Image 1: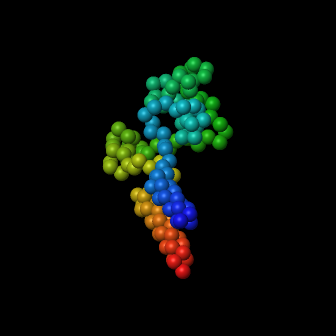
Image 2: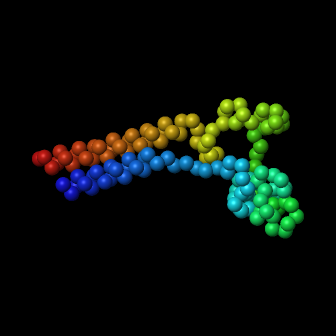
Image 3: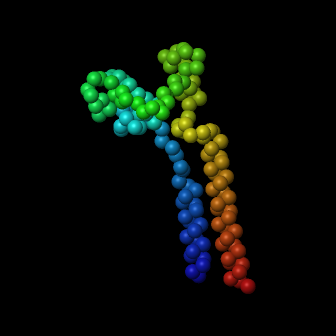
Length: 139
């Protein structure tokens, strides 16, 4: 009985881990950054007062510009308008229905299917382990 409980616990753990989606959280842009490190990591610096990313806690010297001392390896945020038309002219991917709720991690529309395939392999392996143990017990 004890080996079966161990296998069942392992299978239950595998199912739970497979069912929990691993999601990366990108900054939505609808609120200020927590700190300048987060802003720099997302490609934002010199955030003017009135900008949706601005917060008083980001403006240490009180000059109306937050995160105005980016590190030497800072890489600016790339805007989504490739033709220079701007988001007001409908150039954003989100407005054209091509947006996604995935962070920019290299994921695509096939990522959930790949994850589901991996979960199926884990479940199949767990089932085979249980079947093999039961078969050994019956001998």
